[in-house]
Picture 1 (cartoon, rainbow, N blue to C red):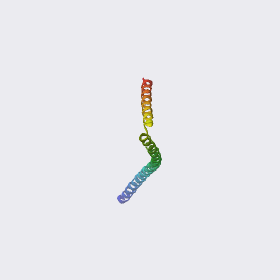
Picture 2 (tube, rainbow, N blue to C red):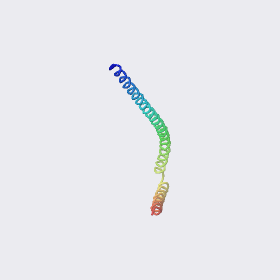
Picture 3 (cartoon, rainbow, N blue to C red):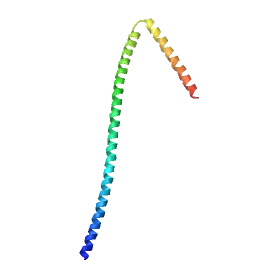
Picture 4 (cartoon, rainbow, N blue to C red):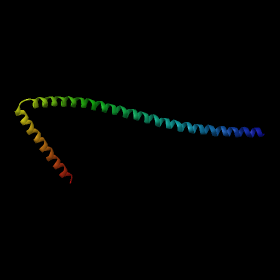
Length: 111
């Protein structure tokens, strides 16, 4: 009769352990699902950022082309005669004046 009691106890313990294992399995499954979702979100974000960086790369390449052309034209203009140098000084002075006027207006607008 004592053996029969131990058998019931062993079955009860086995049932408790089985229930505990099922609970822990479900808990682990939910954590794995969350991790998978997080990994997919990270992958999508990385792809979006790579796409954005590729777009920036092409934009920088086009700006580099524009600046290279501008520098060549500017160099050609400075190497040419005296009239172009005079014009260049006027344009430079005008740009500096416009910069200071804009700076003054922006600082005035903030206060």
